[in-house]
Image (tube, rainbow, N blue to C red; front, side, top):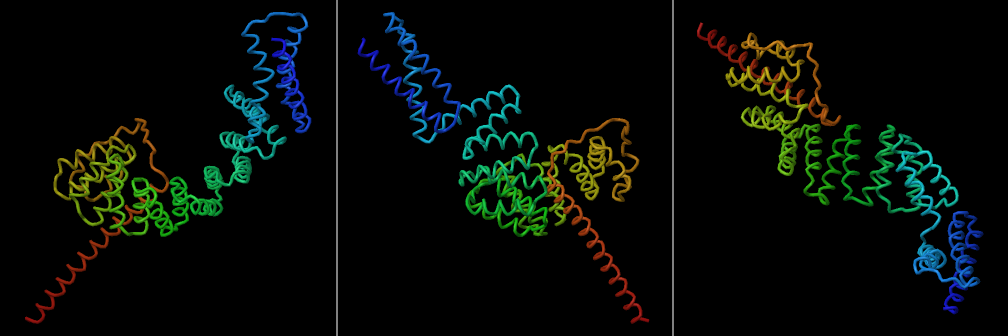
Length: 400
């Protein structure tokens, strides 16, 4: 037993000296925690030897844990390039965050990266805190440090791109995303964000190209097909747009906005049956619901089904009162004007906003196209009518 105690004290004291010199070398007072624990364990052991005490097995385990096992574990971790001091700072910051004290957490992390500028975890956690607080520029600076330390942290590349986009620096964000997709082409969120930026800049062909490239890695992504459908819509390539919307809807049957766009394209091609079917499938989207019912009412008027036209038009007005004025000014509804219910304008309405800026842009484009096609059709009919009248006049003249 005495030999064991001597060996223990020699080992514990050697470890104590090793940790002490490590603290001096790194100039890091965090190691004082370990030194204090070791000193406590060694002191208990010396007291036991000097006063010939018999301590319990539990206390002996605690002594070994404090004086030998924990110091050896720290030496092992640092041999594996895991910084003990970094663990202390990060753990302290996480505890502070759990206590909803982000200021204290930032103080711990700033102390860490000041002492250890190459701390990947320190910079990343600090960046996440700044981002959560809305400090986008500070967050970008920290994410840049993260990438400098770990070139393969593609998530941080994306974070920087997203923050630049939110700051309105579209070209810089696009440049970073292009670089990121060259390194990691299968990253779906990067493709989606870059496509959105291209669409904002009206670079629709480039957006279509990156979506097509991404399909090689994400062939079952309904989002890619849906985005491609919107881009082809904005390019007036309605055949390809329709194919993409149908593919997206086959993957995700709850894609109600996709059904609505398909219905609009069907109206462009004057396919009323198909348009009716797609509008009925799109009514589950709260924002599109009144629009879908309003368009269905128009279709039923064209079909001379006044009963359904009145029913769906009144449903649209009940959901969104603004459709009453539209219906009142729409010539197609003049025959059923007396059956339109006047809404209670004092009743407050909350229309759920579920559509993105790009989706709204596509809807407007489709609506304008439908009006344009309608005008062209009317003009063609007028031209045909004028030609027939002119032909009859010429025939009459010849007879005379």
